[in-house]
Length: 205
Image (cartoon, rainbow, N blue to C red; front, side):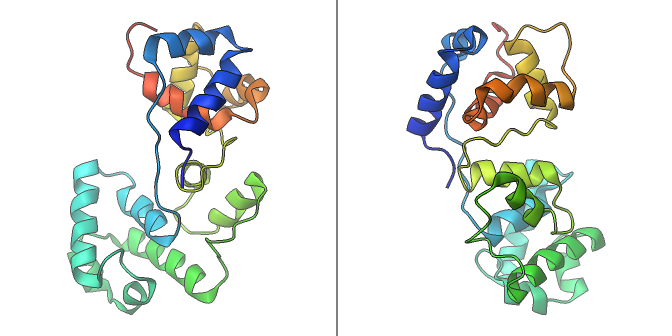
């Protein structure tokens, strides 16, 4: 599961103690709510379903999939489904390929989502073996579903924009610059990432 409220608050307090800009942002925006997802196959399948569509569209497709396959779309039911069945639920050919890639890795035991490597980079490398799961999706999964405290999705545009506002930079930093800026905040970068999303639309920052 993701970082608890206590873990988030403790992590942000630790960073705020040595970074005045984070302390200022906390004072204005307050502590963020936890962002928690279930660990495992269903959460990654939902990630694939939700790519490049609205939240409402993703929810509609997921509901149709569950109606056709069962609760949480069991791996064996997904593998056994033909193209037309999945297409009728709203899954494009490309997303069907991604979903089958995930299911096959799980069924074969090649990907063990209950025992990903403890090293964050090694865990990301495991997850991106799934077709359709890139670095950003892997990082979000590790942060929200596994509660890995030092995940820093520097490629996320909202994280870049949010940290730019928090640090009062003249422009949104690049992915590389965003990664470098956060190095002093390790091992609590995940909490800071969640703060950037929480405070993104706060006009007072």
